[in-house]
Image (cartoon, rainbow, N blue to C red; front, side, top):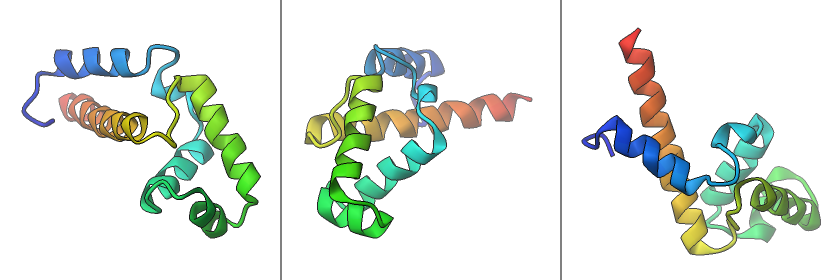
Length: 99
Protein backbone atom coordinates (compact mmCIF):
# COMPACT_ATOMS: atom_id res chain seq x y z
CA UNK A 1 0.00 0.00 0.00
CA UNK A 2 2.75 2.41 0.99
CA UNK A 3 4.38 2.27 -2.43
CA UNK A 4 1.22 3.05 -4.37
CA UNK A 5 0.57 6.55 -5.70
CA UNK A 6 -2.02 8.44 -3.67
CA UNK A 7 -4.20 8.96 -6.75
CA UNK A 8 -4.45 5.19 -7.18
CA UNK A 9 -5.33 4.81 -3.50
CA UNK A 10 -8.06 7.43 -3.82
CA UNK A 11 -9.46 5.65 -6.88
CA UNK A 12 -9.49 2.37 -4.94
CA UNK A 13 -11.42 3.98 -2.06
CA UNK A 14 -14.00 5.52 -4.37
CA UNK A 15 -14.46 2.15 -6.07
CA UNK A 16 -14.64 0.21 -2.78
CA UNK A 17 -17.17 2.61 -1.24
CA UNK A 18 -19.43 3.37 -4.19
CA UNK A 19 -22.50 4.06 -2.05
CA UNK A 20 -20.98 6.25 0.68
CA UNK A 21 -17.46 7.12 1.80
CA UNK A 22 -16.00 5.43 4.86
CA UNK A 23 -16.51 8.71 6.74
CA UNK A 24 -20.25 7.92 6.72
CA UNK A 25 -19.55 5.39 9.50
CA UNK A 26 -19.42 6.68 13.07
CA UNK A 27 -16.72 5.76 15.60
CA UNK A 28 -18.92 3.23 17.43
CA UNK A 29 -19.63 1.42 14.18
CA UNK A 30 -15.94 1.38 13.24
CA UNK A 31 -15.12 0.00 16.70
CA UNK A 32 -17.72 -2.73 16.22
CA UNK A 33 -16.21 -3.59 12.83
CA UNK A 34 -12.69 -3.74 14.29
CA UNK A 35 -13.89 -6.09 17.03
CA UNK A 36 -15.65 -8.21 14.42
CA UNK A 37 -12.37 -8.53 12.51
CA UNK A 38 -10.43 -9.28 15.72
CA UNK A 39 -12.82 -12.19 16.29
CA UNK A 40 -12.33 -13.59 12.78
CA UNK A 41 -15.79 -12.57 11.54
CA UNK A 42 -17.43 -14.64 14.27
CA UNK A 43 -20.76 -12.98 15.10
CA UNK A 44 -21.44 -14.84 18.35
CA UNK A 45 -17.95 -14.30 19.79
CA UNK A 46 -17.92 -10.63 18.81
CA UNK A 47 -21.34 -10.05 20.37
CA UNK A 48 -20.15 -11.71 23.58
CA UNK A 49 -17.02 -9.54 23.75
CA UNK A 50 -19.00 -6.37 23.02
CA UNK A 51 -21.57 -7.35 25.68
CA UNK A 52 -24.44 -7.07 23.20
CA UNK A 53 -27.05 -9.51 22.00
CA UNK A 54 -26.14 -11.40 18.84
CA UNK A 55 -29.12 -9.83 17.03
CA UNK A 56 -27.84 -6.36 17.96
CA UNK A 57 -24.54 -7.12 16.26
CA UNK A 58 -26.34 -8.53 13.22
CA UNK A 59 -28.38 -5.31 13.07
CA UNK A 60 -25.19 -3.23 13.21
CA UNK A 61 -23.62 -5.28 10.42
CA UNK A 62 -26.77 -4.84 8.33
CA UNK A 63 -26.49 -1.09 8.92
CA UNK A 64 -22.91 -1.19 7.61
CA UNK A 65 -24.12 -3.14 4.59
CA UNK A 66 -26.82 -0.56 3.93
CA UNK A 67 -24.35 2.35 4.19
CA UNK A 68 -21.37 0.85 2.34
CA UNK A 69 -22.89 -1.89 0.21
CA UNK A 70 -20.45 -4.37 1.77
CA UNK A 71 -21.63 -7.40 3.77
CA UNK A 72 -18.82 -7.89 6.27
CA UNK A 73 -20.04 -11.41 7.05
CA UNK A 74 -18.85 -12.35 3.55
CA UNK A 75 -15.09 -12.90 3.44
CA UNK A 76 -14.52 -11.07 0.14
CA UNK A 77 -16.39 -7.98 1.33
CA UNK A 78 -14.63 -8.12 4.70
CA UNK A 79 -11.17 -8.25 3.13
CA UNK A 80 -12.07 -5.41 0.76
CA UNK A 81 -13.22 -3.32 3.73
CA UNK A 82 -10.09 -4.14 5.74
CA UNK A 83 -7.76 -3.18 2.89
CA UNK A 84 -9.79 -0.01 2.27
CA UNK A 85 -9.39 1.00 5.93
CA UNK A 86 -5.63 0.48 5.63
CA UNK A 87 -5.55 2.59 2.45
CA UNK A 88 -7.60 5.31 4.18
CA UNK A 89 -5.20 5.36 7.13
CA UNK A 90 -2.26 5.62 4.73
CA UNK A 91 -3.87 8.54 2.86
CA UNK A 92 -4.67 10.28 6.15
CA UNK A 93 -1.06 9.91 7.27
CA UNK A 94 0.15 11.29 3.93
CA UNK A 95 -2.15 14.31 4.24
CA UNK A 96 -1.00 14.92 7.82
CA UNK A 97 2.66 14.69 6.80
CA UNK A 98 2.20 17.38 4.15
CA UNK A 99 1.21 20.00 6.72
